[in-house]
Image (cartoon, rainbow, N blue to C red; front, side, top):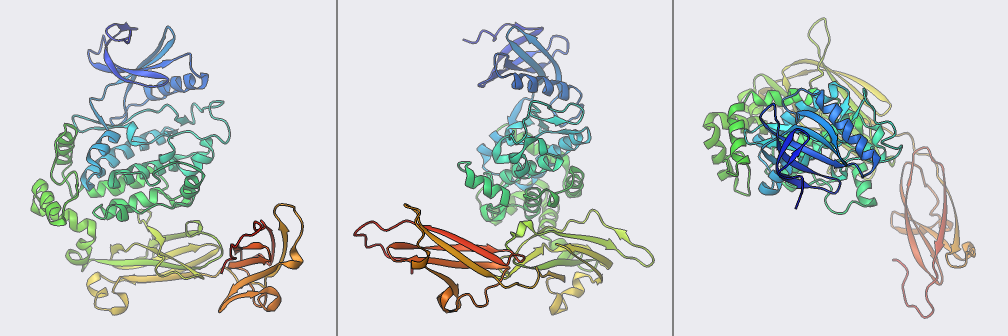
Length: 546
């Protein structure tokens, strides 16, 4: 039996245990002067010293926070062999529990949660604090429908840095939600690292799973660094395209291509709130926390007709139809077709061994009325690779269709080391659709050539993997060319150039042949291949590769 229960700890009357962990426990208690229920977080001081200091830092940081979307810390103290933090008790459930119960949330529910967590993080970032552990388990939803961010235990602050607590090259946080740069070094984080984690949380709200499920091994870490995960709409085709775009940009592996700050996300969501009644959303959230099901708020596996009817039942036919139309872009295509035009940015980049996510592409849009130039910082070009249009030589990057008020604009596009300016008139959709050439909207195409391919000189050496003996003279090196495999000695070396991937094969009697797919960068002119072949077992009938 827990001796802490039903007794006083400090000046607090313990009511009962909430949870037990490896390094401490959570208790429900009564504050003697505020006459309210609070949460006692207990840490066993016999644990690691670094954990104790982080515990204290969490208390100091959060006691300075005064924000409706962050769990309030009232006090901290030491008693006996334990250290305690006294914080606001949130009577409700965690977002983690909600996702496990409902599988995935509707756009309405996800937007409300995303907005209030973004507001909390914006408040913390403005005070120089990076959370570093954004995940559904640290997001609480009260019975009143309020969303609160908790647990700043591994946060870092410019006012109170974690010197000595985080060693160079170490990783802190929950890896499923951790940004690539934080995996490499927890001390290298900035606000965009929290934005990445927020994107993962949004992804999970829309799909019911994290983008990198399963065992977190070396291969998973490589996928995280490359941004290789199943898109939201592939996992849940019924998810909001609007929110899927936000998640995708938040989760870009390269920091410079994420949102620069939370203010941008907050502004985008506030514009969406104009189409919805926040009080209605809050009421729906309260019913969800209490265990009920609200039509049009939690999206289940139903037909689109049933889902659409449920949405209509919550907000009324007109309001819900407007929301759905806005989310799908129909508002601009039909209701506002005389006032808004569509713009698409497309970039073609010569393949050079660099992955698509590593290509630098930065469009900046300006409104260009007569006599002045006005930069539009709120315009977001959501750019992604289009594999369907790419080839073995070309990578194609495209933006989603962007709707803008008709008028005159200028576009500055930085693509790798190229800079281009475009001046154009954006016609309304009603005019664009009359022109076959602009059916998808005005398409501005840019391109970047990686440079003229250079002649490639190939040399090779082959060794016995068991003995180390060189067997180069007995081996043959082949390269895959048009028409099949050709040996380098029989004309296969002619016309080899840099800036592409070549497939080579090493063959030698008594050894199984081996293939090598080698990426040659545009600036590389020499390729040296050292192959080590394991001999076939005596009597083996194993065939070489075809």
